Length: 462
Ligand SMILES: Cc1cc2nc3c(=O)[nH]c(=O)nc-3n(C[C@H](O)[C@H](O)[C@H](O)COP(=O)(O)OP(=O)(O)OC[C@H]3O[C@@H](n4cnc5c(N)ncnc54)[C@H](O)[C@@H]3O)c2cc1C
Image (cartoon, rainbow, N blue to C red):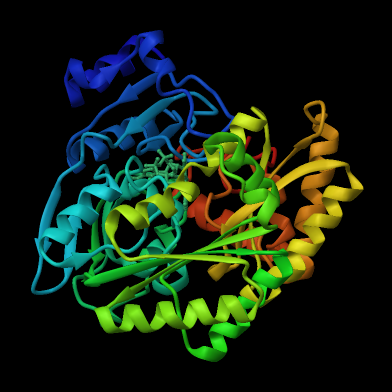
């Protein structure tokens, strides 16, 4: 990066908010996925005006510009794959307004999701989107990824809570989408264009988020099942009984083995599948929903059921789910990971297909995730050795084929990033991809904003 651009960056932000030393750049060279690349500079703005100035500077000089929240993404979205300026929104971390009467919050993008949830709870309000990274990912990153989480089964994902956005476009203009009104049909519905756009169409500098009344009580239920297919029968049974848990998570046998290895338990000898559920609402509703779930689990062959209503007891059950990722990495340090979704009723068939793929390729495969919304997190590895790249790719393709056969999606909540750009054609046809590319070219004529992400590689874009 030439000295003149460095000088201009410093004049916009001040010296302390610009990083150029290699040891500083290194700490911004990765996210939580497998990709690594050094930016040429890190910019740390703390107001929208500064973001605009930096965007204009990058645009004028054809410099790649990569927005970043907390860097917890799993597909390389916040990695500066083509160098340039990494724009970290971490200092724009103020909750600007918590409006109890209108049940909404106005936030800057660098606010940590859990901080908003805790602040909302002080006012008797509730921000439901809860990615497992809730305590360390930012709302800007959640919006850019349309993050999901465990409560999606009842409450939906991030897009369902975005009322409006302030966005800096790749040419430096500021636009405002949506409003504080629940009903608003003034102009195109633009917020959704930016939610899930992975920082490739604009930089979110402020958001108006919808809040709900805080449910007064929660109850948790854990059930062990002799087979995954029996566990899966709970889905239609719940629909028939009109019970909607706020969370419905599953783990397969390989996951139970990993938990046993970490926690010295013996879950895997008792069962092939574990379901963890939560219900919320008023005390009587929580009690009756727990009773219904208990009955449905027994009717479908659950061998052991535990219920918890108190905070510490619920936490003990949830700690199994929270420690799962770490437990899996204890038994195998290197897994290939996928994140797919299918329509909920197709979930048992998808799990059968995954079993088949694992058998065909002699893999260790651990499946867990969000039973209630059809999202499976798949980890696979060789029994003895790491998989060759070509074999991992073949397995990936077979997984995608199985998902697509069931009308599923190849990315559910972890985005496309750098990881699946060439794979989006599994789900999107040529004209849809072309429309996305035209939209990108219209908003970002110099292709400076987060280049190399989301869209398939072409000579023009590379
Ligand atoms: C342990 C763990 C558990 C996780 N669990 C879940 C889960 O349950 N559900 C889930 O959905 N995800 C999960 N994730 C993935 C990740 O936490 C989410 O994708 C999260 O939304 C990323 O937020 P971030 O602030 O870290 O964003 P980053 O990783 O910094 O960025 C993610 C993307 O957003 C863009 N971006 C960031 N800020 C902005 C902005 N202000 N404007 C425009 N673009 C921006 C970046 O360019 C990048 O493309 C998990 C990750 C980890 C490590």
